[in-house]
Length: 97
Image (cartoon, rainbow, N blue to C red; front, side):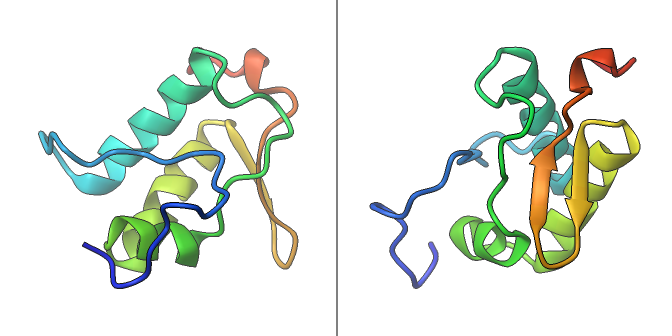
């Protein structure tokens, strides 16, 4: 469990790591993809910063970075240094959804 309390922290995406069937970063990327598919995360939605999400999940920062990178390669995310990571506006055109 993370030292910081995120109970009342405003995060629009809170993945759960209860069932670990494969690599952690792949599981996170799959959860993110499903959240986009079901409409929980809409195009243009800003995702939690990588460091904050890593702290929330109590995982290494590189795990979150790999998950975001995998989704970016699929065309699901757009990132800009200093501005954040967003669900891509053309995400519904992605061949992975």
